[in-house]
Length: 629
Image (cartoon, rainbow, N blue to C red; front, side):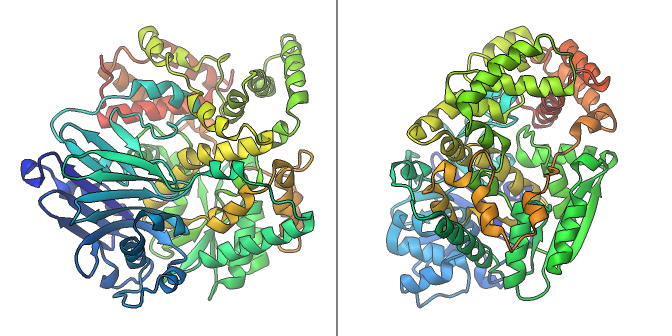
């Protein structure tokens, strides 16, 4: 796994002598500490830092050129089927044993038609020195990141936001149209970022740039929407169960390919336990597993993980996270995300990756299992959606008379989520802890609030859900999640948290063959009578212990609410005060302090909202973004 970057100044490289390309690479040196390379001509510059995993020799270093020097690649990722592709395409004169060369030669032979053949995780750039065209490509589900900016001074791209260059002395402005959306989900969705002029390349897409005039177009090479038009797999249930088991085992085995040690992040849940079970069958040598726990019993799955590790005979390692040692990590993770990303699970994942660093370069993890097989409570709720709407109306009436407390507010949030008539809005509200009733924008100053609330926070959900309106509601939610929260929250978290410690994470549940199979199934085949992950659990019977499959799930919650009451209070207050001095017309400081004090005294739990504010103030204070005021 690696980091990539590139610059195409308007007017050519000679017109931009002050660009500090070394600083760009240094911004994400953690993504590739093993080697560094650069390519440039009169039109552009390409940079690369390498984390060597397959063919660790210098033959795999990048940027890599074809033998005739026409095509150049800067590549981040792993394509697991590269050996089969080389045979299929007749690539017999390879100069290395790396997947990078196979990707490059596949493009040389097939052009953009090769993108859909790659089974793996990747983001890469390929430059045609003859036609002066540049292609940027991102994997099907967005496992690997790719950002770009295009403006009057030129075009640039990078694996991380903070590596993107400023072509002049101006600062990036906050993208006010995305703040309302961020306020609901703790991140921006689709191609948006919180910086005006910086975009994400969407999963399953590629960008084709003419480097002479900087015109470009963005095209789709793969989309989940294509499965909405296909006939569902109607084989008998037991055949579907057997195929699920076969494809998952194949995916795990396939993703063990590596020239360096491979381990597993083991939470003790269904997904990571399944990966551990299959990996222990196919891995040559003793498999290492790693788990993380907290000083709170209700969010601690270490005992379950330890039991699973013992069952499969792994070399097991544990770390414990307490609030006392995470303030610096919070600041560090904001820098790595380049935005106020608010999934607090990035903190223990980073600390776990730090523990792995230096001993295990590659780790398998269970991300994607919930989105492919229906692992969240909201899938169960949607399987009874019509009755749930009736319950929600009754619940809101009953709660007017009920005493206030944590359970009251959780039930109120669920009732609020089920009230809208628009299924896309229901799906969005079942994800977030915010809703129009709780008015999360109330923590912003009135004028700023009016600016940001003019944007629809549910627009991305409406856009994506409309592509699957013919599916049953459970499948609609599964498809929507695979296109929104999977790339924009969970996979972003995994990439930044682990690559910050120079660790590559692979996700077998997002193997091409397994994903295609799951997307050809109906919702009731995966979530049956409200039972989450029914299909996956049936497929794992006899492989994963029943107490893991059907026992009560503890959950991998991060106790940031308690941290805010304790060790993170100084960090919160210091950044709030500094933010107020730098940006006096953005936040309503009195409202923020009132919400914080209510949370500290264990009134209404607004920990997610306050966590977002903490990340927001750190981001603004450190990135020096402007708010157009």
